[in-house]
Length: 439
Image 1 (cartoon, rainbow, N blue to C red):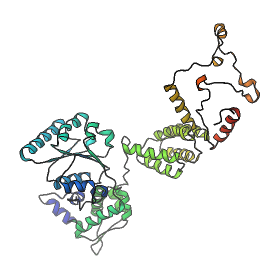
Image 2 (image 1 turned 90 degrees about the vertical axis):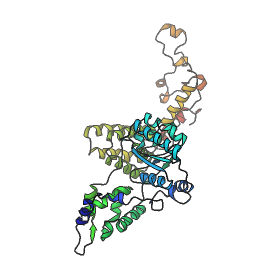
Image 3 (image 1 turned 45 degrees about the horizontal axis):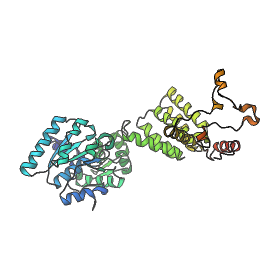
């Protein structure tokens, strides 16, 4: 094995990584993204029709964005130019655009400009693309791992089709692996077996490039058996990959997707899902205090008075996490998340304040009824301030029915307790007090 690798590497052309050696050159060889490249799907139709619009390919690493761009350019017989948003500036962009305009006018040749990590382009760099994209001098293909609606300027977005690429399934990764083992110019010369393919797919995380380069590294770390074959063990895969890569960017969309899944799982009363999404965030390095803060909000917004203790627990969770830090904070977070997920739910208080604010914003600032006003001076008393006010504690049950809202809102109900948990008692108590305002 070493002789073959060394011989190839010592030739004039260094041996490219396995992922590069296995890069597909046609849509028929491309694995995954059937919703884009399958029969009668948009990218295949563009190739068949010979028309390539500007587009942005949005998806995680290793799902084929760069490969698709190259295949589309080749199939369209267009001049292909690739640049990285990390390295290119406005000058480099304008040079390419000027060259593309000349090629179009002088030779009638189309140009595909592929910009990797287009989300890293600043506004000026993106602005520089607008005229050429709109005029058709170039077909722009931008690749991004970030949500383009956050990272790409609106004028450029409106001129591009947005196509979402998804992580490869285990079945698709299996096809990529089998092709590599049986057709690669190096690996195909050996009998190679993966001891635990499912674990390999797990480590790859839907990323074909990661899978192929990981397999190549694992192969290099594996000694041949007496019969000359190779069995790549689970332990060797762990060594080659180091660990399962947590696809998590605390400032990117993944951050918002996972916290959204977590919050919705707690709100939906599924403690198992809540714990899973929390584990994903913690494994990715999320700040435990961020999670704790979100649970404080949730305790009021989604549990509310159905279980008033939920807010106390959530606040205590934040202080505990702040005091002890990770890794022990995970235990406190888990306790709180499972409690909140298992608690009865009510958003009545949340709806109450939003409904009241809507009236405050849309209606005049009604005066406070006279009997509710403070009367610290004789003049105020003479004007009727506080006149007729009934002190609740002077009455049976410490309650007396009187008007507290402005006249034009006196029958308005903002807070409607649910029949869940402790709010059932609150609902019955309020209805007994305010028989004219049943909730």
